[in-house]
Image (cartoon, rainbow, N blue to C red; front, side, top):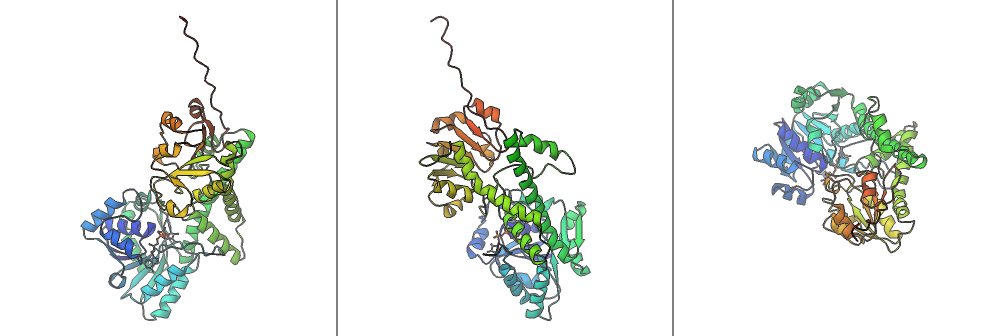
Length: 449
Ligand code: NAD
């Protein structure tokens, strides 16, 4: 099969490279000439584990191409995927479909012969109908089937998620289009991955319902964490205790500073807007959005409380800036709420993230350091904000030697309270009682003296 992928971002590039690895001939197209130029030189525009090797292998095999010009690839394609961004529209929270509409318009002018136009972007219910109408307007003679095929990959594990998904969802009632989609996902078909064929609108809804449910699950355990703190429980044990119940499941039960990232915040908001417009408000999702926003905003005060309520003139070291580990994605990261709030309270912030280079353009007044020990230097408090592996086994003797204070705020519950107490920290985590540094008894005088 020949595939044209419009949009070469986190989803388009990973999907394109994986389809090429399945044996299809894929052209990834992007308007961003710098991105395409870098890709042609073998330089990845994003950080995603395993991506550089996957891209290199498929480029060498002659199955993966990059271009800024969609003309030839779209003309020759059996399937054209739209994988452009659908950010929140400023002001009202609806999904901004301008990139999707523009891509549809462009594709319409280029398709040749029967072509399946597939929406991989996360789009509100009814967008497939809009794309169909755009194509019909621009090219009344075009022989296309518009299909919804939402993407469920997670950044940081994107390749594995694409190649071994829990399911693939395909929304179309057109039998020719279903056959093209079957061929595209053939390796997964052979693996017995469930391929869920639905009507297009249902498929569009599945994506938002899935993201809203996961956001709700995170928000639920975050509220349980607050309750644990208030009444003396341990949220880690509660999460394990409920997660072992198969009806609940253990995933997405990690209490933390509130969800962020490029999907949950915008998708929950867009779903709320869709539901309100349809006259069937989703009150649980509305509450999720509200509670999560408040939670992210409350984290700075939580850090200040660990420092006795006052951070003016204090130095706070932040470990991790991306919204989760193993990605360079900074979109809607909790760090973007927490750090400016700490600065507004008068704190000096120094920070390090292994891949979050974009942070330098998104955060003002931060002293960016080269590693975790640089962040500890002169810090009154250290805050573990993103659970990168390299923060999971810190050399605490070094950390303490660099730090001025002894406060450790672990917003990801990476460490065990007892261990941190023994290390001599005042340790604050989520949904567990804080611990104060153990008072180490003065060494007994030697008997001989
Ligand atoms: P992104 O911003 O990383 O990439 C979008 C790319 O599309 C950009 O490189 C942009 O230059 C390009 N583009 C925009 N209009 C174009 C056009 N007309 N022609 C060619 N290129 C164009 O976005 P992303 O994170 O890959 O997300 C894409 C979609 O997938 C969104 O709808 C998102 O909600 C959804 N999604 C994202 C993830 C994720 O983890 N990032 C997971 C599942 C679904």
